[in-house]
Length: 184
Image: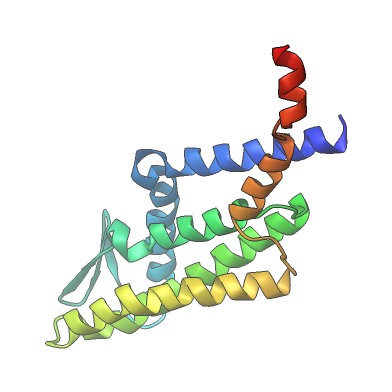
């Protein structure tokens, strides 16, 4: 297979992967992240107290913390995947390392975010702190992680745009003189 064919195949594989990961309202992402988040939190909280887990609720003393899809920031993970997978001219090994770096970093930051919020549960300030973390801090996490991945892995392409630019080079417009010859 020639270089151009490999590039086209890689382009389609990247976007098909993104479509599949996004199906069912990010079902695959949440199916992995919710149990992983609950298990990780359980291990960490176990160092300090004995948590009880019932389905997706972690009970710590009298407080029950429900880990819902929004808690695991599935959309933030998906956005990072979109940014990384829609970036052209990146070697598969580099792309794989970038995905792993981004996902692990966001996962760790998200666990820290939840651990910071747990002691606030039941407090009058919980809703405000939760809103700030959910809407502002999580956005900052994604932006900083993306910038970090771009710098660490020396990514030069612009997500989506670079792919569109490449596709345009494949579909070269027919010049007017060629059209005129065909019409005669």
